[in-house]
Image (cartoon, rainbow, N blue to C red; front, side, top):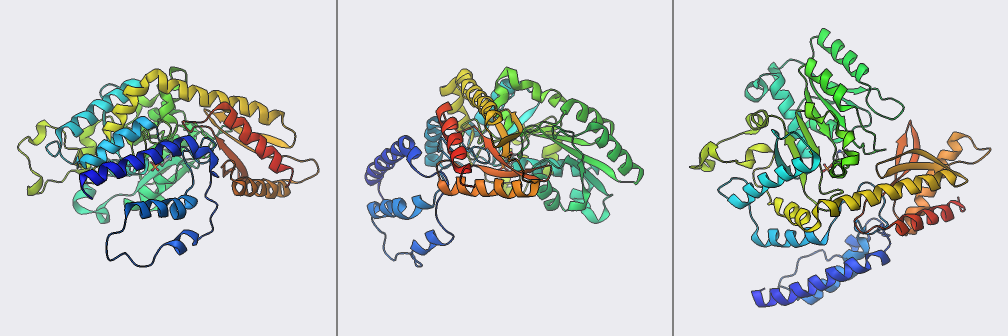
Length: 470
Ligand SMILES: *Cc1c(COP(=O)(O)O)cnc(C)c1O
């Protein structure tokens, strides 16, 4: 494809994208295909000769699109959002056109320096400590993995990096049962074993109990086990619970444990001063992660990872083979030393475009709308016969289940699960399930960029309608 053909095809693609933005509402939210449907339509063999672009676009529409779950649908209330704004898309086009590898300062000074500047902006926007340093990772899972490695190395004076785990003392990692599974994955990948994870009990609001954390650390220390790290969550995946950061930070410090805070979803909303109280005490953390690629509209992938002491992270991850030495040396930031990957995409441009074009007030009004509509919905759920509001809203996330006279909890749980299947097969909206105190509930998370209050209420009306059939 030469540049002339590219220009023509690209215009067609842009037209398709703009139409998609306008028309996404008309698709079922969750793909309505069975396993294998898409695969069956794909040729087993690659073509010998290059095919026409028009044919490819036709196949994209006929084969791929029906198998797509529409995360940008305004009635997507499942999981957490993975928002795409038009502003972010424009930046992503430029990023992909330049195809930069931002592993070293020298391999694109603008990528590194814009990343440093954007992490500075985000610190300011979330009112994080000015002395912290930041890096963009691909996902929160990667940032949490880095935190586990940094905790492991700091706790053993960087000995595991040198001589491996076979000579290391036992370490323990603390979090609550509400925490994201990425911690367990990280601990396993770090070679520390699932058995080193301690799940601290939670209170009635599903927040970690600091006194229980202190007692568990004390017990481990008595047994000769090093309390290496505690991970607190602000905005848990299940119900949006927030752990008390201040009290946890005090206990972590007293035990010399690394303190990591996961606000993957909720962090974006902290741009609103009225929600910032949820981060009270974050200044006591060693690291903090949130995903602009969830709620902020900076499309996947873009994870903001902040650290109190960049030397701890860099010392844990640095490598310097001869082919990566540059004459600038330590006078510049080489972000390859800040994460798992060597090669890294330029991601800061998306932040720059979204923040500049929307402005802080533009972002705030989106978060405020979502939170307000979730509050309205919670009131409606409370007032609807046959339903029980179980948690929330915590920011814009609530959970509910069915409630019927004369049925025991087991029967009700079966009906709640059945309702969710009906809702998602129907396609008008898309919700996910979770467990609260061991019982299934349906999550409703308001957070898609194009969502309106009418979308929220229309989705709820459909849920109520479908519940009649259960
Ligand atoms: C989504 C989420 C994660 C994982 O995010 P990735 O970027 O997909 O790794 C971790 N923690 C919480 C609280 C989340 O909501």
